[in-house]
Length: 158
Image (tube, rainbow, N blue to C red; front, side, top):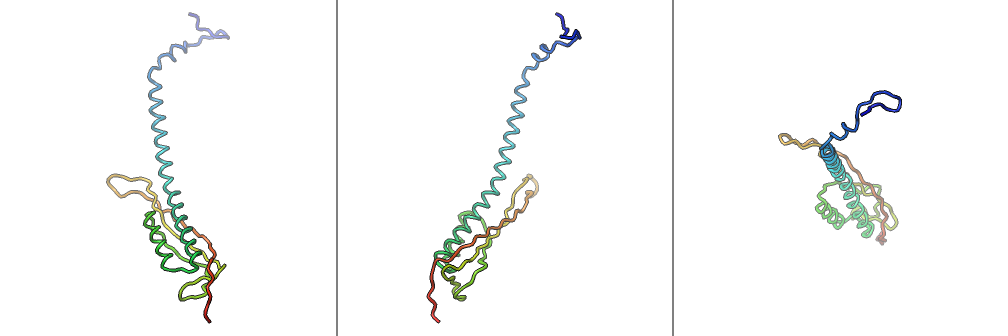
C-alpha cells in the first residue's frame, strides 16, 4: 500500500488509528451526562433565590392591597402578614413608611394618601453542605418596597 499523499510525502495510515478507538464514545457520553446533571443541579439551586424574592414580593403586594382597601394599618393587616409568612416559610420584617395618618391613634390613612410598605429579609443560600461540619452559606439581603394609595374616605370628627 502506498502511503504517499498528494505532494509525495509519507503519511501514516490514519484510517487504522481511527478504527481502533472502540468504546471511547461511552466515556464521552458519561462525562457529558455528568456535566449536564451538575449544571442542572446548579441552576435548580439558584432558582431558590428567585423564588424567595417572588414570595417576598407577593407578601408585600398583598399587605399593600389590604391597607389600600381598609384605609388603615389594622390588626387585619398584621393577620394577613403573619398568615402569608406561615404559608411561604419566610420571616421578613415589615414597616409602613412615608405615610401621613389623618388619625394617628388608629393609624388611618385618608383617601388618595400614599404610603410605602417595605419588607426586608436575609436569605441564607447554601453553597456547600459538608457531612462533618455546618453548611457553607451566603446571606443574601432582599428588600421589597411597594407604594400604595388609600381607597377609603374617613369622615373625621373635629
